[in-house]
Image (cartoon, rainbow, N blue to C red; front, top):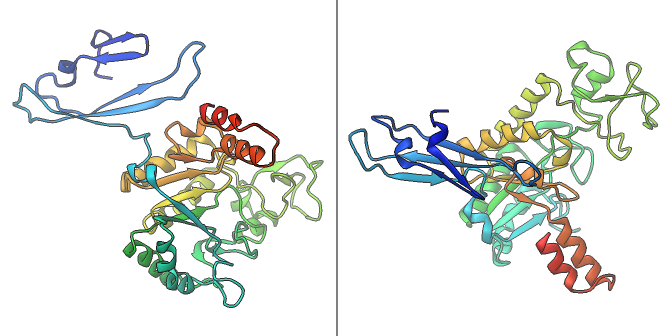
Length: 324
């Protein structure tokens, strides 16, 4: 806001800011510059932060530049290994946090430097994506202390840990949904509702409308992000787990509003600039790159590789996908 129009010149794709405009007098305030596509151009907004140093009496200040929308440097060469937490140990023993911790050396031997854990929270399902408690680990996997011990063991081995964050929906068995379903007023706006003619079979609901779901998955109703109470609830979930791990793999990221993810990013990056945010957006959507996520599912490349492997596309399709 402190910059005058004359301080900025634009030539094609190049924007210049006069250095003296960044340190008038004794002012040494940080500057944030936003760039957005205009007219018929397509793209996403980007941000540049400039820290002005050198002290108040210096006529030649130092400038430090940071791009807060860029991914953390460590992820560029990362090897990410997915651990399905309820089957990783095989069929002879139960997979628990303690059992996974016992196998950290094996994971490290694979050349892995990052693990993505499928959901570790309470859930009635083997895959864990139907969550019934967003603030506690699943009893069949172990206690919160055992989870943190496992994470610490990975860290000792130089392996980062990604937490599968499931906040687009909950299980229908979640207490909040049961209260919503029963018509308790405090939970009336916690879940999406759609017209009753929507196909939501095998479920009885309070009220005239049915909860919103994706793909007729009636077991996992969508939470309602138009509700401030829900936003506070989910931010509390973020605050609960972000200090423990090194990043989030965000399930059904495409179902959660962009504005909420921007708030999540600001929140976790303020605590740890190297915290990773990986989105599940299928198909790939570049809009989630805009001050939201660091890493994305490259579905274009995946489908191209699959089709080349099955003989349904020429090898050049991979190059086309990489250029997309």
